[in-house]
Length: 264
Ligand SMILES: Nc1ncnc2c1ncn2[C@@H]1O[C@H](COP(=O)(O)OP(=O)(O)OP(=O)(O)O)[C@@H](O)[C@H]1O
Ligand SMILES: [Mg+2]
Image (cartoon, rainbow, N blue to C red; front, top):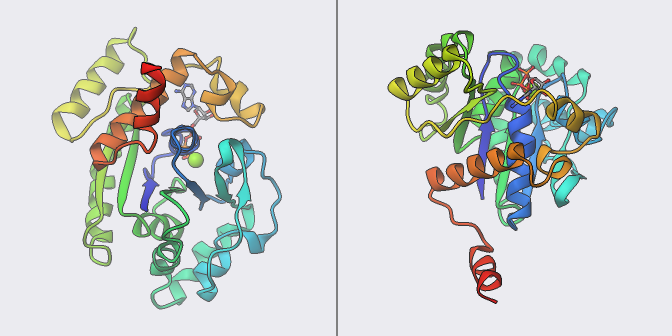
């Protein structure tokens, strides 16, 4: 089981979109996937059709009362989801008073070993307790970065936080930088991508900006590759997922099955 947290304190970096779509793609490859939403905005939950979930079905009691994780909801592609709700914002206020509180998600997620191949955690756009809880729970961080100047400006802060979290999670590292919302028509985007490649590693192939698909997929409560299968957007996600697997040194469970089908 690998625990990956989609992490970037900058808002609108495509954390939730990437967690949803990479998670779905991993599920279609045959991996058992659990998504955990730790953002009180709860976009990931809403986009997968889980809104207004009982507070007890969020990570709230795990974080504040050291309870095992709640039963997940089943969502698109057979993925499981532990959703968030707006009330989860309270955890940011409660956790500083709880010794070892930010370590609890890490411990309880590891108790799920054997049930899942991948746990994907979506983190909020802040550097508060919920972000720490989410990042520290991970084996590896995936950092989505929009290919604009503003996206690059936040990078030093991301790297500094990873170093800070490393005090309690020494093996934590950024496994993959995922350029997002890329527009190849624009020199500004090309320059930002080049800057990213020159300064951090590994940097994946960018996911293109597709304003016609993303809002519609969200409204349809579906991951992009389910809403628009066969689209260039779905191909972007598939490639990003394969690159993430390669960065992690994991091979797809049904690689052989696909090979056999291709031969048949
Ligand atoms: N490749 C894309 N093309 C077009 N729109 C996109 C793309 N990726 C994400 N979006 C849209 O941009 C917005 C921000 O994306 P998303 O919510 O995934 O980012 P986030 O990092 O999770 O944001 P937050 O920090 O608020 O949690 C969303 O409305 C999403 O639908
Ligand atoms: Mg988000």
